[in-house]
Image (cartoon, rainbow, N blue to C red; front, side, top):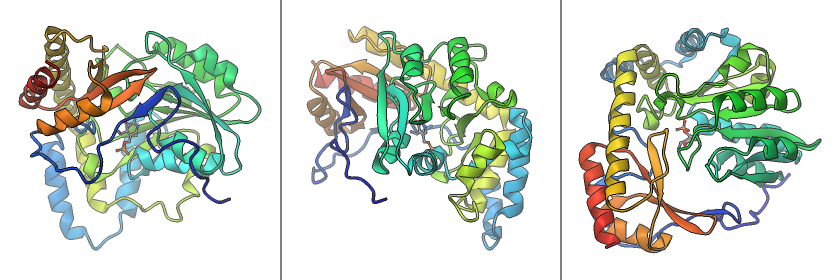
Length: 362
Ligand code: PMP
């Protein structure tokens, strides 16, 4: 079927949630802090960098064998067999492929609102209906409303935990129970892009459900905690029959560079580096949270490498004024109120950000 025209503007995600952008022809100030894309300012790990450069001379080779090795290493890391793993160029690729594979014949997609939009946008573009369930007042997923929304036309449920753009977490046991029940009816896609930022013991991955045989697809990425967003590599963990549906959408499954595979293998082994990234992000998150508090803001407690807080000026004005200060952030409107979403950068960048917030809203 032809790709459908979007019913809403590109950034009017729902009646509840939209994002602001600046006009393309604006004059751009010198960027002093790029805090709009949830990039890890500390990665890749030194071992990944070494692997990258030594792999360059093998640029003439396809990555068949290396991909198989990474698959086995990821399987061991997740505690599943390697037929439960699919590797691709970032989790975006899997979200897009699921949009095409599961919604080509229409149907509906159930998810929270606001949430990460990639799967929703592709599903809508190929003809699906989005059943958007507002987050609860505490920013957690409204799991009982989501469960009620699942009907005979539902092709997939999407859960982003911790959630983007809010940075918030849904209770692990409630979510596990929801996914277990729901996945007996439809596949449940759980996007865990930020899961590794959680302190051990804070949340639970839904990979345990895959191990129990449930039709849950868990997405992980090397873009966030591993600091490799530009290298484009991620993976999903799921039932082999479901992964097969997704894998069929690319002829060879070879959309990933040989060098990225080498870097991912090295980073996966560099447990200490990942741990350091977690602790440094947590420290910078506390620094940013208390910095915003002392400026009189009420930031939403985040479990990720970014956070949101309500702003006083409108979304467009705040975005433009921050950009004029050389600080790139995002501004969103959620339930009629403007918010800033800021990614965690270095401490120096966060200080530049805090100074800019103080200046533009004073
Ligand atoms: N899921 C979520 C929740 C994200 O925030 C992002 C990146 N912003 C992605 C998936 C995509 O990540 P990537 O394609 O780099 O793996």
